[in-house]
Amino acid sequence: EAQVTQNPRYLITVTGKKLTVTCSQNMNHEYMSWYRQDPGLGLRQIYYSMNVEVTDKGDVPEGYKVSRKEKRNFPLILESPSPNQTSLYFCASSLGTNSPLHFGNGTRLTVT
Amino acid sequence: QQQVKQSPQSLIVQKGGISIINCAYENTAFDYFPWYQQFPGKGPALLIAIRPDVSEKKEGRFTISFNKSAKQFSLHIMDSQPGDSATYFCAARGEKGKLIFGQGTTLQVKP
Image (cartoon, rainbow over all chains, first blue to last red; front, side, top):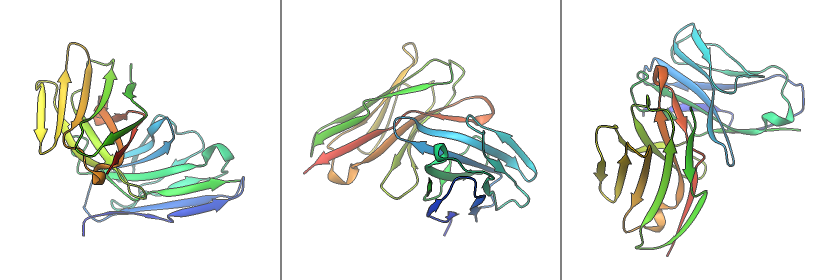
């Protein structure tokens, strides 16, 4: 089944403790992206990647890192999480920038 | 200029009624306008999309109306059903294929 898989689905952590949210797609998509969803703010792009080893900042990149060492994987790294990063995170992928986005089922992160 | 403004934030409609969600944009360089549907616990999924050279697109009970001069577009759900209860996001595609999303509308269809 074609899908974008995120792990974990739920994560509770404390301020400053490094964490990684994994994202993997099995559709051989070149484009991958991370979004955060907050009430009243919609979906905001954190980082995106056009292909392996090519990443760029989105609208809200502060406090986040990404890497794209393999085509299928695009992990999101929070090196020192803070409470304002409490949010619902989505990974998405597409064949290219002009193709529909396929989203994962989300990771709900709480930072205390 | 990169914003997409969506309204209303929430909407309650009776079964069989028409649900209407509106979006407005500023950037005339946007070239593609999709709508995404999101059920609880799931990621958004593409529902229907339109390009700015078309004024209307219909797929089943879902219709996008596009007004290029007013820089507005809307989603109409005809004969709304309880199964349509979800959050809806409009979006617009700009530079480098980047999607700018609206704030989202939570639709509840009452039986």
